[in-house]
Length: 334
Image (cartoon, rainbow, N blue to C red; front, side, top):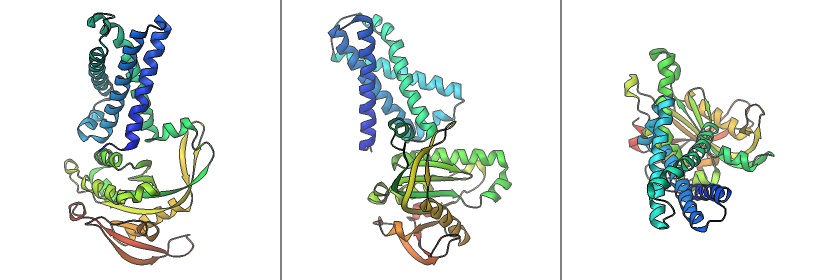
């Protein structure tokens, strides 16, 4: 399902593609209106379809397999995919704007290099965004976190239970490959549920949402259940078991660093979430949430929250009310 943020991204890149095309025509030929119209349509189609393709790669397990290729092969496959998209966009634009400025062959030959360059520029933006974390590039570019601010955020910490024993069983190289395999399998789930990947920590991952997004339709719980369903690693000879901790509250958010810029979260909320995850491991629980979060959730069918009482956490003032979260049977069997 496409959500409003994806629509806005596609629309933004459509405008960017049109602007690039118009700027090139104006620079080379001046205000030639038929050419401007067609190139604007081509640029908009290329920008929109390339952006949609990039987002589909993140949410589709089939397209995500391209990333398992060696990097050079991955770039070649992506360039070929974009080339198909560009040729199709130019053909559609020729049908929508039937102005015979050039024969189709000459139009393709002249426009392909520019269109491909624009497509690769868009792909580059998505790759940088993937490197920094979804949405981080945009937030850094717009200066949203140039000055620290306080936000209400929800966190889901998901890690591999018994990871030390698993690493000893299969060796460090295969264990790292196992982690990469599991994260690749779960990534489409994170995208589908609009989770922001904050950080990888050892064998775990920290996901974050604005609280309103996390509790809407219990998105944070549905994300957890769908992620657990994907924790399959038969080819490694192990049955991975996840452990999760969830908490929400105010957190300081800001851009930090010089040599490497990133958006950081700082405050008790994330510290408490990490301690809840540790408490869950000590009690043999697979999914635990704080009362602060549970009180804001409307549990979907198949989910249950069982109170386990107040728990004292190290270096945290006062006891924290915790709940064991029971997932639907299809997820809990993993």
